[in-house]
Length: 233
View 1 (cartoon, rainbow, N blue to C red):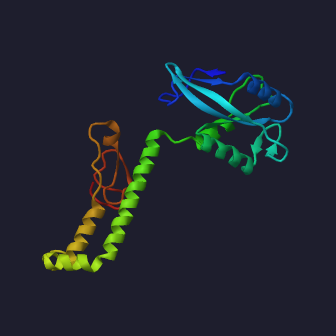
View 2: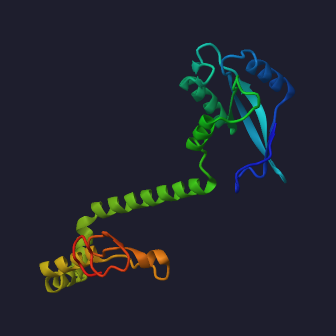
View 3: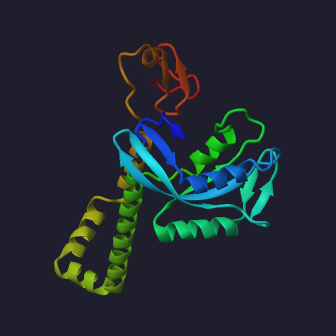
């Protein structure tokens, strides 16, 4: 079975091919067509082989559910139990293999994904290598930050004495008294609140649609005063 179209930039390449050993495929086919009313289910473990056209997923093992391994089964859905999933995924992790989720749609004439399948695939998408690297980088930063925080807390008095000996504490105290008065802080906060992003120039939308820089009210046309707060624009 080959799917020739894959999303742009897919790590699997242009095409994906599924390869089954003949005994495994025959057993899988027999299991999937045994009931034409309820959806049938199976797990498969696979390894990957890259080639010029894309990727081949080579099936190594197939697992069929026993009685009690399915949490739900009907003509419109099938769900394996958490224990069944955990067993298969543990084996996959131990053997360094991927997992295929295989199930049927009894009332469809051709094999295809449903909207529910696509939504679940997106929700449970395997993170890309870049996303994994970003997560690893984030974890490293968090760990280093925690180590630095613990170090500073444990040596707070030592750091404070060092800063005082260097005169940094007295210098900062002087600056605060002379420049960071209550009035200065109030003015700085007010200016930060009143700061707005500059509007783009040149486009028709920017000339005829704007917002008041004070109250953020929507302005239409070439208004010079805001109708909501009365401020000059």
